[in-house]
Image (cartoon, rainbow, N blue to C red; front, side):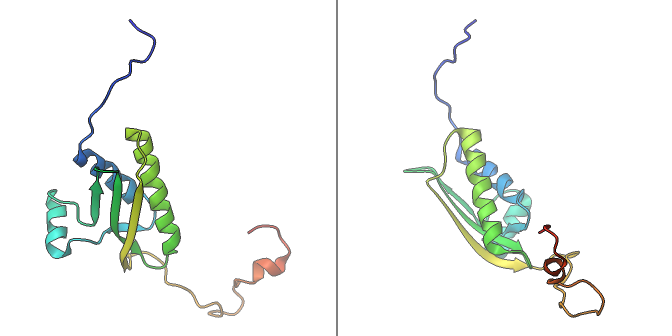
Length: 141
């Protein structure tokens, strides 16, 4: 039995790469789903036959194109940065390759049930406002 690793090759299908990317994207806080495909694409996604809003190209280089739904009220740029980081990390660790390009398009913002609406800073007198922490003299941010 050999202790040394034996070099070799492995074959990863395009479908497997799509599933890795899909799982990585949907694990990011703020992503509500994929926006591409219209009604037909969303129907195919629900029955398991398609991935609208997710395109993976393996040749000539690994690239990923995403069309996402993001929850309303979250910083879109930060969600996109987290998605790119999650996709690159997942592919690097799962298949040993990093994508040359990860293109992210935000198709729509979706209002999710249960998210609190944005508050007006002067809504109720006596409640702490945004400037109260800075005025308190504490180092907590």
